[in-house]
Length: 164
Ligand SMILES: [Zn+2]
Image 1 (tube, rainbow, N blue to C red):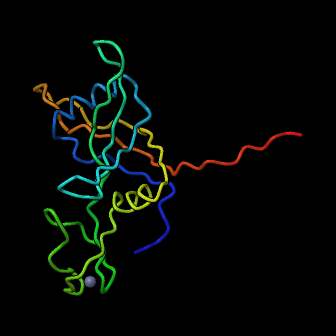
Image 2 (tube, helix red, strand yellow; image 1 turned 120 degrees about the vertical axis):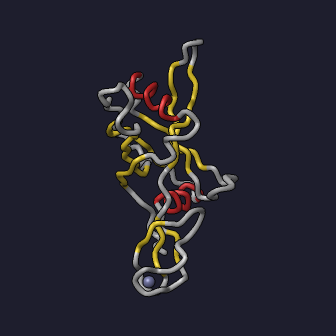
């Protein structure tokens, strides 16, 4: 398990097909939303390393509302014996390494890495790179699910310098 936190990461939001998030992504795209917020969910029953991805949009009723577009990806595991990287299986680690049959795995998913950093007080910015999908088939239904490609960057606060 590495100790250095991620600095700059390209990724895409996962979990975008639940909770009407396809419609929410359309709203965010139409609003031209470019900045997203990352929100830790340590109480998440599915994954204590979960990080939600949220956007603030102007509401029809006036004011702003904050809506969730999905989550940070967190599916990768590394075999503790040979280091081979595999996707998770269901709610947890793979049952056995396909390279060496090892059964011990280290979680190395992006959300786990970012959660460790965020829980130690580091902040990240999250920008939209591209809204994807939504092309129409001839029958008027959507060809591909909508998604959001994102760029996550560690927020660095530099000391201001004052002229004398
Ligand atoms: Zn292995």
